[in-house]
Amino acid sequence: MQSDGKTVSAKLDAPAGPTRAPHRKRGGTWALIVLLLLALVGVGGWFGVNYILSAPSATPSVVEFEVRPGWGASRVAAELEEHGLVRSARAFSVYLRFKDLDHSIGEGLYDLSPTLSVAELAERLVSGGRPRTVRIVIPEGWRAVDVVGRLAEFDIGSAEELQALVDAPPPEIAPAGLPSGAGLEGYLFPAGYDMPVGTSPETALAWLVDTLEDTLHAPEMLEGVPGAENGLDALLGTIGIDVHCWVTLASIVQAEAASDDEMGIIAGVFINRLDFGMPLQADPTVAYGLGKPMPELSAVAGDLRVDTPWNTYTRPGLPYGPIGNPGRAALRAVLDPVRYTEDGFAYLYFLHGVDAGVPVFRPNTNLPAHERDVDRYLRGR
Image (cartoon, one colour):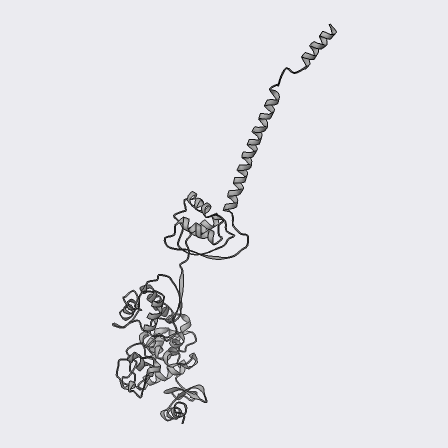
């Protein structure tokens, strides 16, 4: 019986086969592993998206970036990636579509940085860029035909179109008080202009004219000028000229002067000659009327005797109109001329000559003194 009991006991203790409890334990482990993997993928995806949308660099720098006409969101994104401003062009395009900004990017120039995130870049680009500009410099004293040529060089219309507007300006371009039939010669203010690419001829010329008018009426123009207390119109009346005559006389002063320092006396000479009824006899007016540059003017060839509306040898008073576009110094010199010597004698003559190889400027109050200077400084006698 004991042996049978042992046998029975042994049989009862021995497992009859695999139980289900261990099987349940292994299935739970696999489920946990899957959940952990999904969590890791989600976390990794989040970090991946965050990485792609973050700034590509922590180093501050500025990149000039241009969105050109006709560029869509995909082209902009590709250019941004090429310039190192985003990590992924595709991600940037998706972001724009997701935010419904893919049709809101503005053309123009932007100052961007690789330290900007995708969201910050998008905000910049939908705000609109500044226009691309070209720097156009108009030197003092240039004639209108030269200004036209300079503008045409920068594709501000054709030379023919610009010249037509200069010769017969429409009301929206013409300065206030422009005499009937007069063009824009003298009113195209010499300065540097940053003009947007594609500026129209009308806009460009109006810009130059407006700049002149602003200059004429700026407070600095009258600052320190004797007799300016009652304003510009009163001062011009004292001199005996209007605005058009002012610009005309300033253009002659500009053409005659070798430096700003000479302009006050040169303006004084011409104003005195006008007051005394003497012809101005300004060579640059003759050259302008003949359509010649000053170096080509020849008294020997008889140029001074060829009558034109601008010849101040053959005609009294001021010429028909300006002979160039004067700068601020020449305009101010007319308002504040140096008319007299310290002894009170009126300046009536001047010349530019050479003394021992050094350029000289010689004003005089009488003809004999002037002729002596001509012999010495021009003829070398």
